[in-house]
Amino acid sequence: MIKIKGTADSMMRCIISEGMPAEELPAALGDIRLRGQRILRGAEVILDFGARKLDERLVSRILTDFVWPSEVRVVAWITYDAESQDNMKRAGFSTSEPVPATARAKLPGTAPSLVLERSLRSGQRVEHSGDVIIDGHVNDGAEVLSTGNITVLGRLNGLVHAGCEGDEGTIVIARSMEALQVRIGGRIGSLERGAQWWGKMVTVRVDDGSVLIDYWPALK
Amino acid sequence: MDSHVIVVTSGKGGVGKTTTTANLAAALARMGKKVVAIDGDVGLRNLDVIMGLENRIVYTLIDAIDGACRLRQALIKDKRLENLFMIPTAQSKTKDSVSAEQMVAVCDELRADFDYIIVDSPAGIEAGFKNAAAGVDEALVVTTPEVSAVRDADRIIGLLESMEKSPIRLIVNRIRPHMMEKGDMLGVADVLDILAIDLIGMVPEDESVVKSANAGEPLTISSDSPAARAFKNIAARLVGDNIPFMPVDSTSGNGNLFGRLKRVFGL
Ligand SMILES: Nc1ncnc2c1ncn2[C@@H]1O[C@H](COP(=O)(O)OP(=O)(O)O)[C@@H](O)[C@H]1O
Ligand SMILES: [Mg+2]
Image 1: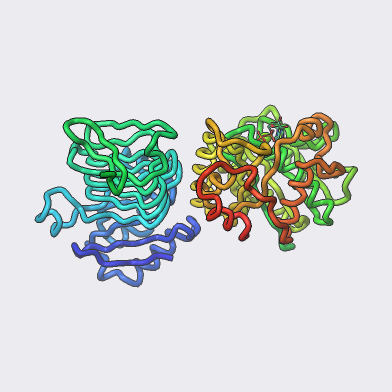
Image 2: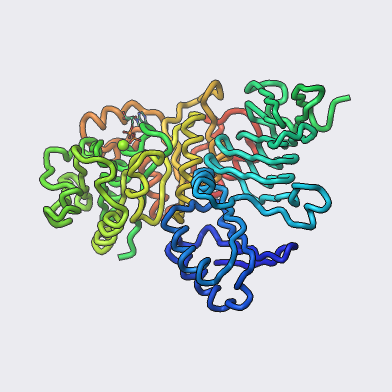
């Protein structure tokens, strides 16, 4: 199934369900093209694939069957699969959420928070210009990179990097801290398995140049 | 025929895929299902050895794909169990000598004749896994309770999900009784918590597995060892029987066990 949503910045977001077989995908997009020819022409579109892997064959079919004939402008190809992200970037496609003008006016360079209602598995990655809230676990081998703050409502096993463009005023919050490393801005904090914070709810921040971890709520 | 076409895979190598394939194939055949086990791990070639059929090989999967023989000529019929067949692979070939399209065609041709088609595959991170799994609908992911095996299994589950395989079910192999949560070992409840897919079986560490591999006779043909019973239970769950799970408390580490138990029993 493909859902289409309008965004605040009058872009269109096509949410392509992960369960849809790859062979059916170009035809389904083609169908949208036929039904929405007038609206689509010149429109700015975000293609949101969830954790789907994007290979060359699928991307070129989407280009030839949907993007080129409908004359849309794809501003972002969103996938959480880290390998696909790297391939797409290398091929010159944008893989990050566009920053709406409304947000840009308020806080330069910052997009609205990204709320992800899922767990990230090993090999999956989320990158976002703005805060990220993961409503799930971040498993060992998964990555979250955010220019802002990161909140993990589940277990944090993987790698998170808050303030990944250098902002050391950002924080990481995890419901259950089980990661060996947390990055904030240019700093790296490391933890030992079984340390006192292990498995606890914590906040991590930079204070006076060093990475500090604390229970939440903080012990007085 | 309403066949089940299932790949047996893992994140990491050496966790028990081939053992699982051989034992489930034999157990299902004993239950009266017509079963073929395919060695999809091209180049490694050991399913035929574990099943004790290596001296009966005339043609292989690769011969059938190359057109050197017909697919049914590559089928070896087991002499111990009426309904059990296997298709061996070639040792001399590389992992990319079978394409995805060819595997789809092989599996589809076998659907007409078999209830269960079980494909033993390379570990998911290796080349050749995607092709081996191309023709299947369902997946069984095998892992041991080690941290590194579980992390690699997690990655492969993501890959299987993106390949739209369903259901994807988990087998935790080589569980030691009273396993301590120490170092790099996890309890079964923790493995389930991380991987978040349905558990279909837990197989204990059992030296009879190694003996049966050496003897070329899957345990489920005639043994009643702990691992044999575990594989028979998995086979029964595959055909839809409601077999209760053994309690996981002896295999679990610390943590919120009570909350997690629900998941293990509630299948
Ligand atoms: N439950 C078990 N208990 C003891 N040994 C096992 C068990 N499962 C597998 N093994 C042994 O582990 C090794 C690897 O198993 P195998 O099935 O060949 O793994 P894979 O196909 O994933 O590479 C073999 O020597 C096998 O006999
Ligand atoms: Mg093997």
